[in-house]
Image (cartoon, rainbow, N blue to C red; front, side, top):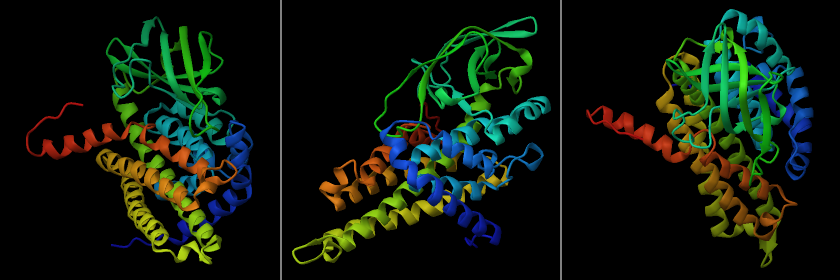
Length: 382
């Protein structure tokens, strides 16, 4: 089996690294400390085609394969996870969902705007009483003539503060449905921004829908297709988040290894101490294992089949690796790792989010278990 990147993928990776080093890394600390969305970075990313990374050229996208897209998210996350996950929400959850499930009119209306960064996409699925049980939605979609009236409350809406387009899920007469709702739609109000431990450059908001009318033509997919639409979007996002976990874990090893080479205690660099070697070597082994899971899952996504099982595996593993590696590498830095003046504190806080966003690790374990026991004719409920 050939795991080598193509010449084109190698070229893309070099371009991503150059962009991130010049445009993302210098701003990462400010984005985190000031808790501000990376709007300037997103504008420059749009100029490079990254906001339409996987969209076809017909819609002014870069038409990257999913492996190359994973490399983009990995690279950005190594410098700033807030930027990486903001972009992944826009591309994986919104733009790609329109591409896969949208009508031709919806694609023509929105994909060029999303690719150009003229509209940022936000994903509105979670509700106060519908978290892991995401389909237990209370938001209602009531048909009236050629319109649909949306009423309900959404929480943890990623990109809420900066979005121009919301992908909203609601209970319709035939089941869960998905709707494209522009930000300026009457009855839509972006509310409270959640303060978070990490990913402080991202915005997670409460969204209020009160008599919010949208055309029936804004429904994404057919009546009752919302569960399928949401699941496909979340599977794509799981791979992107795993790539982000790879990026932050890999970068943390680099930071700690450099520190250990320079930090002198007891007359020698601490890298010469076996305990430090065990921490760094063990972490790199886990990073390399994650790397091939990420690239394999991204490759499966490129094949166009069902990659849901592998998406859950890689997301769960990435959350664990990112958390344990950043924790160990913070320990290597000691007191310096605990200081906000050094990047390890931010990386540790950001990595912790991966066990929660995009579905908690426990839910992905259930999905993996469901596949295992389905082969033995045993049904597993969440």
